[in-house]
Amino acid sequence: MSKWLRGIGDLFRRTRVSEQEFQQHLDTMRLHLLLSYWRLPSSAKASSSDRIIHESELLTHGLRQQESKDILNEQMKRLIVNMASSRGISLPPSADAPPPPPSTGFTVEVRPSNIHGAGRGVFVGAGEVEPGSVTAIHPGLVFLPRDVKHMPGFPKVEDPNHLLCIRGDGAVIAPNWTQGDGGEVTPCG
Image (cartoon, rainbow, N blue to C red; front, top):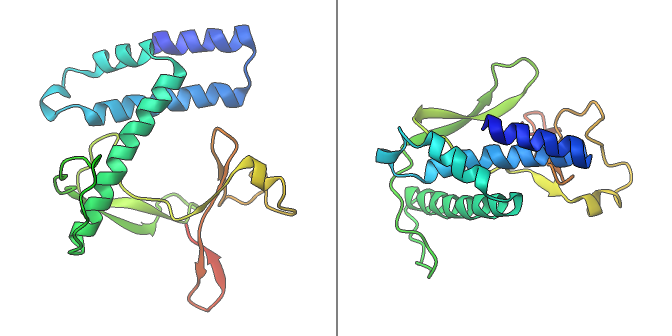
């Protein structure tokens, strides 16, 4: 990984790519490494980290992104099937559906964070989670850059509103809004 990081750092200096683009490359590499690890059979995980890093370094940024999307789509299908079966709902099989997934082996819960001022978050309640696993789905809204610029007064990420975050492509992710205990509207999270 350090070789790749040095290489991407050199690219950053030579081509003068934006910090946002540089961060996107780093985030994509980290995501791809975690998802590639998740995809391996359990018997191969102990000795495969160097191989995963080497294979990921050989891919272009676009291929790394596409492979990550494919693995995430596979995980989302498995997560939805598991959620439905836990409620006794039988989903009709589709042509591209992955084989029936094993039980997730963990539970998630929403609770206050131990970090002061961080609000509530999603945490593993019981069991263990494989690195690179999708554990929950964010209930917030995603506003694409082309939409945000047409929303007068929409909060910017730079404002002291800690409930917004921004993706590498400039999309703003805002949490869902719900009714609080006293009937007031409060942000989830």
